[in-house]
Image 1 (cartoon, helix red, strand yellow):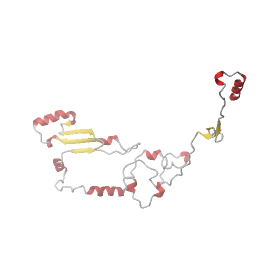
Image 2: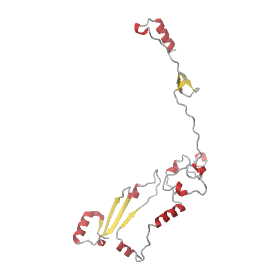
Image 3: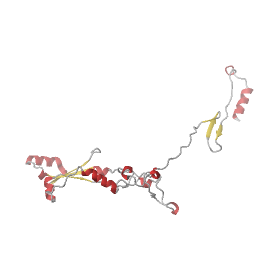
Image 4: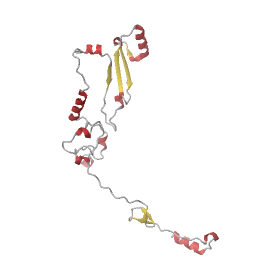
Length: 219
């Protein structure tokens, strides 16, 4: 309607000299795809690229063998992967008194830690790999006092299992070192100097120096 009014206005009034040599026209705008599609078309060409639908591949769980090596599927600690676990696991709040949601797209399974990498077969492989680097425990160190005498430094670390979006816990990087000053064979001057530098880290009652620090990620 607006285009019709514009054409009447142009034909009824004299055109200026600069526009007499020009041609006035309009292009109709139509919508393709039926009502509700919302794809605009100009000149018979669609403004949206049509892409063929890609066929979905068979899930990995259906391709797994029964006697496969599970340690190659989950070699280390990782979040839950529904395409790698061939088990009908369900978790979450049941909707309308039904069953809990399935494993695909289930955030409850992703945000909690799992022990899929610590199967008995994986533990045996780890132990077999570390066995070549281990030595037998000395028979002379048969009590705690002898161990503290020959190995006076104690290093304490803690591993955490927490429910969160990451399997890494920042508290696991905290390292505590304990050592008795009597085992360092220090003279009186060196002992007083170390106690002054340690400050509150030194316990006079137990004669123990305790240092707590944050280990680096590459250590």
